[in-house]
Image (cartoon, rainbow, N blue to C red):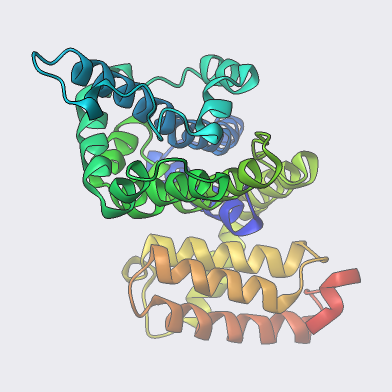
Length: 314
């Protein structure tokens, strides 16, 4: 689920919080960073469990329809494509999934009104009405309706973003990676008829080590790299450079110098892309210019030594 770019985002967020707090407790900040990263898995479970909430509301709708004073033949029908959706059933009946929801304390009980509003939007969509009008949906149609619920409603829903922001201030930045993983989960469920939940890390030991090492080394090299940035940004005082820009440059410089296996182009491309998301519109040009000057010094002094895969573009 977490790729290296998102791990860099987590380090950036942790460094920003560490600096803004004015504290010097590196172990505590490091622990909070790792916990924040692991909370992404909880967000993933929250998103996926929305399908169970929608299924519950669909069941209540069916009961209400049957209890009308004068129910129609449609109201009295036992079949319901959404409630009979085989993929949705397999998700709702999966003990491992339900156990994980319980273990990670994933519950929508405090937000039933908001989720009900989202469900009403789902019911009014053309794709859902067409699906519900299908007498016997195929497995492919069962999968497609679940995919469309997310891509056309859930992923666009601001009320959900507001809830997530209340639960965790960083979750809005984490949604894109979670949503990508969620679609992969649904596709696998459709293809193999078996729920396979995504893992948080591709390689837990390696990815965690990268995260912690980058965080520690940026702090270790902070003063040295701050002076170097000041030297290269001759027309700028440090106070005029955005905190995020400084952090992104220091992270890039740390990677260039201390992570010998990461190719130079990878590092430069990653931090330029991050600057587009976390800094001002012109930051990427400024950051790129400073890093070009710094990199020339690193190469001339032999400070930047690349090995293995890191030599690909060195």
